[in-house]
Length: 325
Image 1 (cartoon, rainbow, N blue to C red):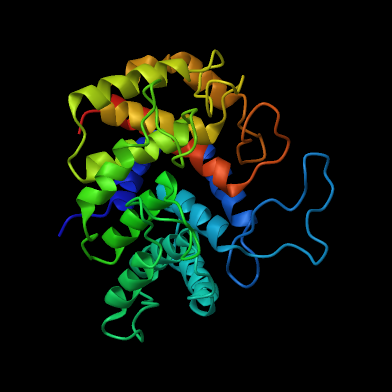
Image 2: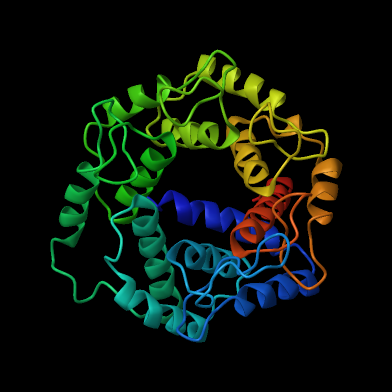
């Protein structure tokens, strides 16, 4: 059985982070754990850039942020059985709460990592055909253009959400139907600058939809040399002077999300030398907080688990690609 993409990526990041000092890893482990709430899930940001509370009713656990905390702790080798059991306690009633692709992949990934860490199978009582049932839900998200939308109410395919659906199909061990239509959908999202867009009507490419597109084409063995070369040309254009990647050519600064997805794409395309390793490390150091956690970009003031994962993920990939396997 093929190991799912998310687990292969997680293994690459973990191998790299194992090469970093213990005190560095422990500091960020403490940051992740500080965001775990009593009920077991993890929270996102609770204050804005000015320090004002974002929620009137207090901080709430969130599936999206929980999945990033789980990914981060697992990459640090710190997702132990006790932490996993607490996450399982929160995940169990959270199953099926939302019909969005993001929540489904967040729940599925977290549940599988929990099972690995502590043996709790959150799908043990599910119907035997639950993968087929879930696949039918995903197909209700499929749009006329061959891609997938965020929910069944969507009318146009999204590059990012199509990527998430493909990840979900891997996680449940099912084959994505009519993959050729999805490949064609992705190829039609490439623009003249060599990058890819999120939805069809967009003209300006972005780093993150480009990363999702290349990952999809690679998954379905549909990445040809011309597409590869055009994409590398685009990645050169969104390389920031500060050492990371920008979200697109109009954004004047790099951020950790775009840097993670852009650098991962460079590695997979064999063009990691687009970025200066020294400048990339300096960019990330400037966002690394002494109390743990990373900022999203230079304008940010508050760390959260999502952007901390992106920064750690970039560092893990950087150190992994430098070491022999």
